[in-house]
Picture 1 (spheres, one colour):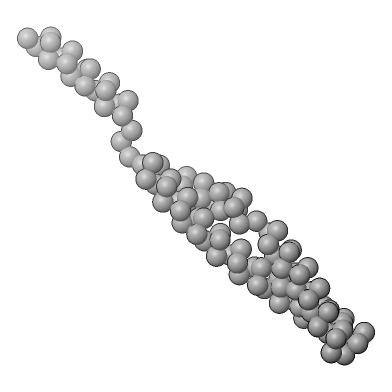
Picture 2 (cartoon, helix red, strand yellow):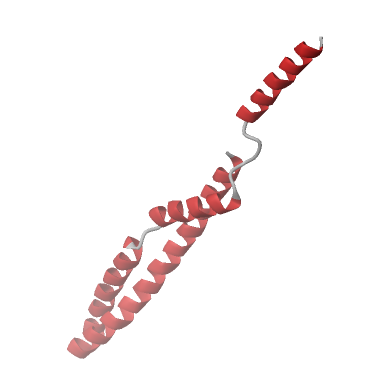
Length: 107
């Protein structure tokens, strides 16, 4: 009887070792979420915002003040487009990071 109990205990120990005991670590999930969010929210949006802002600013400046206005408008529009693109990218990064982190910790 004692021998059967020892064998049963050994089998239970092996089964318990095969089952994961806890979720992935916080450090692992943080790194995973940062990588995922970086791929999802890339800097193409910032570049596109800069180019579109500069082009729009140049056209408006040209219409208002001729050649001098076009240069100023391009600079102002480029800065505005960069800021607008950065805001959108930052928000997408945060959302992707939170979702990836939560999924990682739950798995």
